[in-house]
Amino acid sequence: MPHMIEQPMMAKICDIQEESPGVKTFFFKLNLNFEPGQFVMVWIPLLDEKPFTISYIQKGHVGISVLKRGVFTNAIHSKNTGDMLGIRGPYGKGFSFESNSNSCIVGGGIGMASLATLVDKLNFTSRGYRGNVTIIQGARTAQEILYQKRFKDMKLCTDDGTVGFKGTTVDLLKDLLKKQRFQKVYACGPERMLYKVVELCREHSIECEVSLERYMKCGFGVCGQCDCSGQRVCIEGPVFNTEELSRMEDFGKITITKTGERVIH
Image 1 (cartoon, one colour):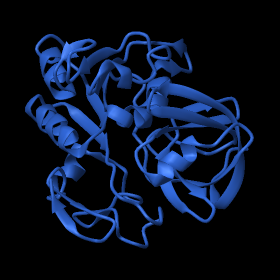
Image 2 (spheres, helix red, strand yellow; image 1 turned 90 degrees about the vertical axis):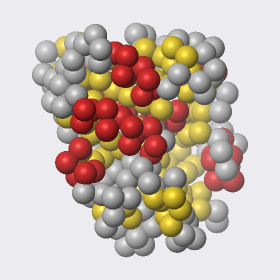
Image 3 (cartoon, helix red, strand yellow; image 1 turned 120 degrees about the vertical axis):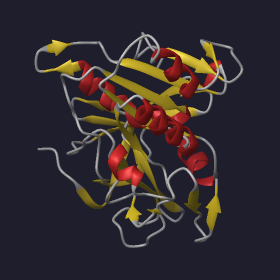
């Protein structure tokens, strides 16, 4: 039966898949009671513990996509099949699921990992494959686009124009909204991008949910490092809807660093 792991459980890496030059997905044989948008804490003994979303769920296996960008993620990238990592969770509030909605997914950079299992869930219902979810994915350059073989019909954009639309995910969403209507938009990526997506959805009276990425230390609401206007992203989030975000004055403007400093975006 799927379950939550409350203490770190050492799990063996059973497969590794390269998604881009800087992103690898590490697969584990685990059954977790996971909803798209939630996260797990990944532990490397004697080093640290960090939050990651689950980007794949496949018949008793889960995958975690990791962008190499610091000491901890470099250490994960050095792992091989058969090596062990500690995993606990999942934690947090995930995305709400509406199978009949005409939805748009907006992923920026590694934020696409948080949306990948949601795409699977929206596309595959009890009635079978639907495949009518619109996916926008943005990156700095073509090499950084994720899951191109997994999701065939994505609308891509890059900062340098090396693939797809030249510009941002917000620019592309704005362009699409001139031609079609969505009942709901789901997004994950840099917070400034999310802020603009939410504002655009408000202008068009479209329901929106976003997954926030804030510095997390404990994962269960004790340390307060992930606070956003009194909301603990690890407990009340990481997924928030438009109404909730309207009450969060720090959203898109101020974050708290791991030293506790409040930094203006």
